[in-house]
Image 1 (cartoon, rainbow over the protein chains, first blue to last red):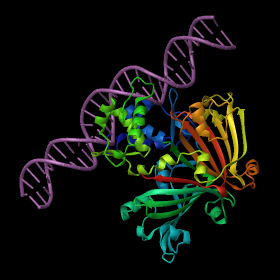
Image 2: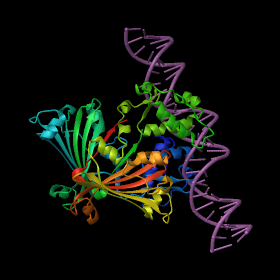
Image 3: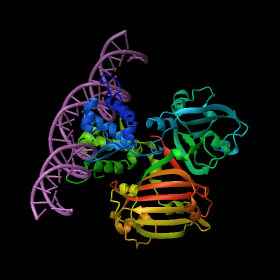
Length: 244
Length: 244
DNA sequence: ATAATACATTTGTATATACATACTATTGAA
DNA sequence: TTCAATAGTATGTATATACAAATGTATTAT
């Protein structure tokens, strides 16, 4: 693996270092729990100061990818499953790319549909007005692990011609000036029915983490209604909360 | 407001500063969006270096409490006033009573057990040291819907003789001076095995929402390791999050 | 053998310093 | 008046340095 920092680049060194580390810790030896080179050594390898290097490592520790122990060293957190931090507000692709996980889109199609009653009432629109429905089957290269159904409020102004492979909320922000701000989620468990089992390439009756997500913009106006079906064996939802 | 850092204290300066800032930014003027004193000034006020101060601010920015803008300043995130964060830290009985649901304890027993490896390593203790295990089967009058297994760090000082029918964290606080501050949770779905199905009075293979909860005190020391198995048809986990 | 001690290793804390960059406000010229 | 250049202010990036604290290991004394 090449560990090369470009001191002439416009990109800050600690960002470059962070990216390098994210890639480095993907490798099997580190996932197996081997300690990373110590900070002093690593800073020499990367030709940056220890202080700068620690900025990068701190970020990764915050993100839950690394753990450090005084007098011992730094290693990759062991966990077989992906996890999603609710703390910072992120879209699916941001969540994944933050972990250096490549995303694969298995299905992606857009259609105009009449909303179900509960969706129409969430958006506060009539049931006879067609809205945009976005279906996505996504996951890792080796297989899908989540099936999404999203519905968008007409006010968002999506035409259906947009590039839905780009991060959704970035696209909404740049192209339509919509800033998603608040998300309320309901998480529950259910069993895979025939449809979901087929999509997620698993068995009927397999455990599914079901996430309903209501997204609002800065004015608390509803923007998106999102249903996510996650294969439970490859996804863990994590929450961190603090008292007072 | 007193802004006083104790340089002789055992507590690291950046932790002290972080706590001070957390309190400072509670005050109405900052919640209204007024800029904090700039870093150089603030570091003088607190008598710590700017570098150290930035460590504290970084943490708060990461936690979504502050935003910084180059050339402008640092301020409290607007949504803070809605205090979604302070509300989401609750114990089971608080959660339920907040929803007006009466709680019934179906089972409740305490024992001293040798910790499994992962629990010992979470607590940072040896596997041959017995710890307190608390098992609870709880739910509504008409039937149980959650099975809990809790393990407590020896330092908490539980004897096993306490009144476990009272809200747990209140009891810990009053009787043992332990203040639970941070909780990290992992939520996933699984199927009921024989044991869980019997406890929750449901069928084997029924969908179960599984919640692992790690509780820490104010010093980030681990206090409790908690496993919760929720009958998916009677429990939904809700999360509200906001963008920075 | 066992316990106590010393030592090396590695992360944690803290400071001082310098310059870069983004934004704001002011000044000055067309 | 308007626009562009400039100065000022605040955060952002980066380094060098020093010592503290926790851990694991090797050594020594009992």
